[in-house]
Length: 410
Image (tube, rainbow, N blue to C red; front, side, top):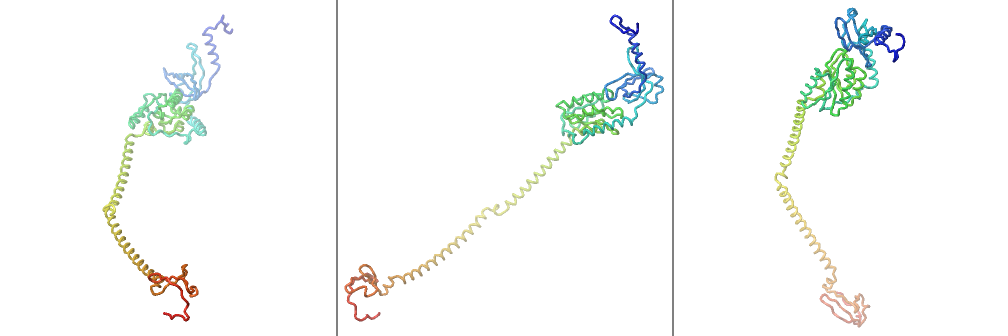
């Protein structure tokens, strides 16, 4: 009857189902698995814990009996990456499935570094680490988004140092687990939430250092890609120098510690005030020099005679004008005198050439009645009416007979 399939009329008892499950699981045998210890608790010499997959969200419980624990060659704790030889074991009474551990070893550091290096090369090949894609930080952020553990020293260091440097700065806090199985999902979600906040000017992811295995989550591909896709400038302040997590490579700025992040993100108000005072002093000195130079130039201009004694210009020009007037008068007088002499000479020459002057010397002009001048005796036969012009008047006359002999010359 136990082998018959269960039906509505003939259901299996719970114990039968549980025993069948245990029998099926027992046939699976042992298997080597790799994962991260996310819970490790000892009780009565036995260890009860949980093992999480390195990339997927999958977790199984395990048990290390005291006899097996005594044979383990290393000490284990939460956060360790291990390889374990396990066998599934179904507890019928409690209805739970757990992995019974027969052997457990730490994953070699070389293996983890090799995987990390492969991921580093892959992301670098995609350009996520290029300096050209890194965004500059704002000079004075008004609001800082802080991803960190709640009430952690990293939170206190960032807030205290930032407000000491610039008291007006504010924070939007996004608490997240910074180690363990919840770390990657919570830090990724916190970064995305702050990136979507319009008031946040810059994001700081802060953790106060830790060993290499505890910081492996900051090299998780999901978290690194979320940081690369962040539009808001992002600062990585994990505080680990020896093996830099990949978040340091993709961040816009890497700070060595949370305190260093606060100092590099927020300017020092006293330093800025000193710079302002220095700039004002330089401007004052420059303006004072310019004004002094211009005052000297004005003083030099005012010291010149044309400005110190303005009447000097008029007096000097007055003397020149008097000299020029006297010279002009002299030149005009000489010109008039020469012109008068010339007129007298021309007058004398004109008088010498004038017909009146000829008449004054005793000559006369004989004209016919029609005004023609008689130049030869034949022009005035006897009885011709003549008009004789003398020096002091006219004399009418009549031509007589021509003389038989020429008249004597005077």
